[in-house]
View 1 (cartoon, helix red, strand yellow):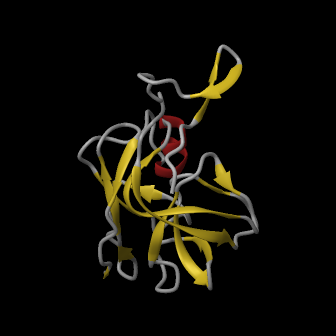
View 2 (cartoon, rainbow, N blue to C red):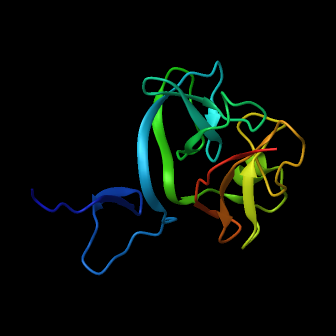
Length: 161
């Protein structure tokens, strides 16, 4: 397979990336699968999802056995529309803006470095820095913050309280 140079915009004109130039973009990486959004609405970047059918997903929530098995986090900005396919990060680093993380984690200013994030038991498709403590809820670790814009996705085995 041939190596190809990416196309970039330079002064409003499309051209191949020149020797010595670099791309200025957030870098993430990890294992990604492509699934179909089976929700009635778009699902935003960073939202934890579970597999509900062959190659399909819905927003995960830590309050029931059927919705607690996090497959990964939506990894395309801003969202995956209903009935559309898109990438879901199953492990690795997910990069999103602080505003995008605020929408998923209920924070202000993005994520906090070295804080563990869990699947939210109260709201589908959300994460929280406070692990569930109520009997009947599941403790599902999603990952930990490595900066205000990056989450190291580490899905951990859940525990029923």
